[in-house]
Picture 1 (cartoon, rainbow, N blue to C red):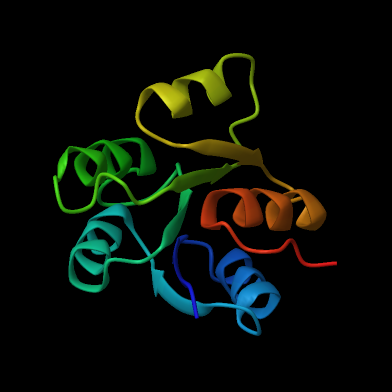
Picture 2 (cartoon, rainbow, N blue to C red; picture 1 turned 180 degrees about the vertical axis):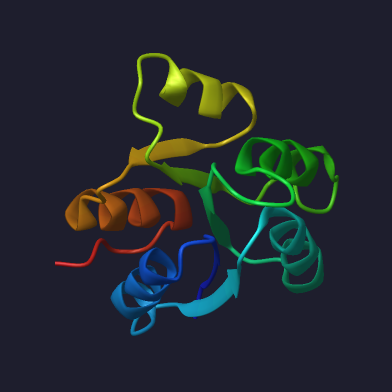
Amino acid sequence: MKKILIVEDVEFNRDLLVQLLEDDYEILTAVDGASGIEVAGQEHPDLILMDLSLPVVDGWEATRRIKSDHALRNIPIIALTAHAMTGDAERAIECGCDDYLSKPLDEELLFEKLAQLLGVDAKS
């Protein structure tokens, strides 16, 4: 079973993602960027869903640190964020995210992106 790390500080959003994904994936969670970096290093997930507005270390910096680690750099990271201004998607890609989804989350699009990045069938 593929392993996904959800890095999200808002409990409601984190719980929603866990409920949405737990039947199809092994789920790990972190509540801030620093713990997200730590969990990624310990667990080597298959994919990371990264909120960008996080306490301690924000998601932008957490992504840069993960992508700069030789052992972790190939883990796909999808930015999940309320940052939906012009240029935010490009900025997320520039800091190392492999893809970008704005909140509120389009569940169908999330499953399509997971399928694409993990090489699995999209959930119907």
